[in-house]
Length: 178
Length: 178
Image (cartoon, rainbow over all chains, first blue to last red; front, top):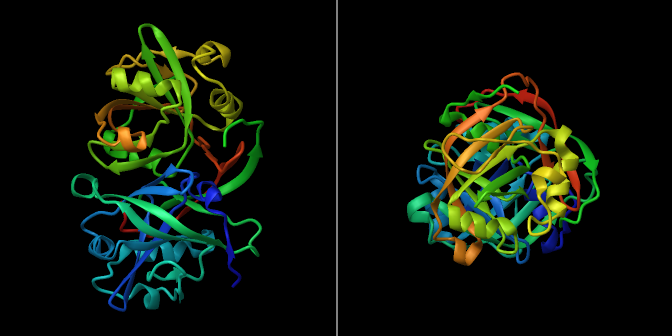
């Protein structure tokens, strides 16, 4: 698998369209993965990402304690594993092992990249003030990676109860928007 | 155009997949529309939606003052109008008129629904504490409407510089996720 650094100013192009992502964390040698769709860009550069991690999730305590994670962006080929990670808890199973995901070391954080994903965003918690009320973390993306060999990565978008929309065609319009 | 109330508990199924939306507002008889992709669900029910509205946008002051808006969800047929609304400012043009959008009255807010959109979510600002630092508003959805005559509405997802991914096929997996 190839990895190429993506300029941080381009990160919004990956997250703005709303893909399901896999959030990976690590603490004391134990890793975890959770499935997440409740995220939004908050700033272009340095890229800030807001996301909700429920305090019922095993990831919540790890993220609060370590203040580090990786946002991994899977493509449709990984849909079964994405749902598998959503259906289980890191309290009960080792998800990397159960779903045959491969951890790879990051450059800025201790949390592992998921090798099989198209993109990996190494993040640190930048603001935890909204955690108590909303379980809402503001993350700063410190380093971004993509797999340059994938020319048409198709992300998936959760629409509830295990239904996912797969990326279709792309249209290009004249835009002054970033 | 038909309108059917959507149970509030179902709102997440519309916003979670990350569609581009049109945010409509009104103040003193003047309406405005802005294009927005930086939003996320924050709670299922009552539905809370977090979103970034830049303080450079004309909408920012209206939203701060009136504490009301409508999140309108367009389909691909409206892509040109979506980009048009993103390329212009309500300081200079009346967007409903310029882009031939039809305002319709809401039931809970003074801001207008956009008749041509597949879904309309009437919202009130629930929390403005993150506005000063992040331009981040927490909205509560008070009432949700969909057009029941549209069986396969295809949303669009911005990937930067006027490129949009159109919803493709749907896949269904066994999931314990909501």
